[in-house]
Amino acid sequence: MKLFIYLFVFSALFLSGCEKNLDLKPLDALSEATYFKTEKDFETFANQFYLTLPDLGSGDDNADLSMATNRSAISNGSYAPAETSSIWDNNYRSIWQSSYLIEKAGEAPADIKTAIARYTAEARFFRAFAHFDLLKNFGGVPIVDKRLGISSDDILYGPRNTRAEVAAFILAELDKAIPDLPASGPGTDNGRLSKWAALALKARVALFEGTWRKFHENGNNSAEMLDQAISASTEILNSNLFELFDRRDVLGDSSYRYYFLLEGTRKTNAAGLTKAAQRETILARRHDRDISPSPALNIGQGVLSPTRKLVDMFLSKDGLPIEKSPLFEGYAEILSEYRNRDPRMKNWLITPFQKYWLFTQPAYHKNWDNPGAGGIIYDIAFGILTQTGYSTFKMQQEIGGPHGNDYPVFRLAEIYLILAEALFEKNGAITDVQLDQSINKLRTRVGMPSLNNAFVATNGLDMREEIRRERSIELYVENFRFDDLRRWKTAETEMPKAVRGIKWKGTEFEQRLPWSNLVFQLDADGFIVLEAASQRQFLPRHYLRPLPIRQILLNPSLEQNPGW
Image (cartoon, rainbow, N blue to C red; front, side, top):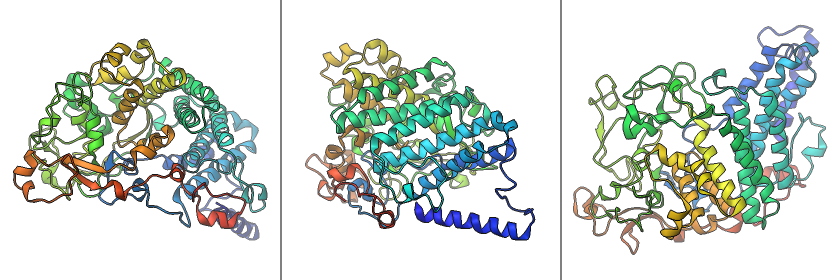
């Protein structure tokens, strides 16, 4: 952090010095002397913050529900402290920039202070967002609430703030930002922040910290945090501005998948629905195919392969886990495990022998004016299309690029999940009414039976496990799983397990060409093993990442995380 600050401050001083010596205003560059004088100046400066939002392709390869082509050192616990960290550097860069805007807003002409309050609030949101990313990864870190200079020794050479102090700072920043952000609904303000986005971040932070305190710190005021998660999520829901995307009336069971593929003007689905047709997204990383195309995601090399653990999480159509449901047809046939399951399974995974479309070659493109043309049959090509025998379908684009589909940073589905989990973890129970107000909305959207307490008791289920199952399935490859396992303190149990794929022994795979010629490591139950348990570990130290070595060398007051 200090190295970046020194370079940034030196550059700023050098530029301003040149300007002073020349005694002129540069015509092709910005300077402090001439900038931050108008509302437009603040708006333009704030625009850069949106580039720090997560984007397509930032999925869950660090956890246990998917496997990347290249094994993840984070997932298997083989990583070591590094000299630098992009998480550390990028977040403190964002914090410096947002703090800079906040400082300049305090110095702005009186006649624009009201007009620029919105951009000050945006800066506070992004400063909170960056501190939260640091908190999740490193625990307590130095809080930066001002523009640092080379003489800011109290922070540059100061100790880490405590975890509680960082969490309190994040929530306080959001509380300051919320009143000055517009209360606009979806489809307005060209993707800029609303108060609902700030409330969504507040709910996410409070749930994370509340459950961390409950499971890592023996409670430690977890109820206070969970109350904030409940309050923030409830305020969003009570606005009645957002609704789950459910267009099964025109898109059938594929409706849910096409929510992630909507573009601004192009036809990306059978009904020709565009982004304007959805009201689920609270904040998106916005894209436009002509101005700021979205990253291209493509089944195949580099794309995450779902693991056995994820696939077995999908309930049967009767709402029961597969080990309890008479509807589950087992693994003997390649297609048998796909039948009678939660419809999200076929929205998230490509069904074997199904025709699908890719953007990579014109012959594979989807043409919605001739929907049967082109495409390719999914033939389970191990090592090419999949590592595990399963392939991710979620967010995979079908038509030729460039693409303009957005990445939902916050969406209504997450808010329902936050509410359900926070209610349960605070009270140790959740009522049927509360279930209907939260995760049953998600089940109804895909035609699954509702969850209730009688069903859980009758079938010997665990309510906490079912709430977590719903979250894991709904938010698959949206970059939540690794953080969830850590805050639940279940990573030490789940992460060291072997990474497995399809069942091989005694199934159609073993008997049918071309797969019968392949050789895999198998476990005792006949499932293929991609990474054995002996190759994986999750030790107590892995709940937090190690601080970058360079930062500790620059500031000896920074203590390394335990075990590193």
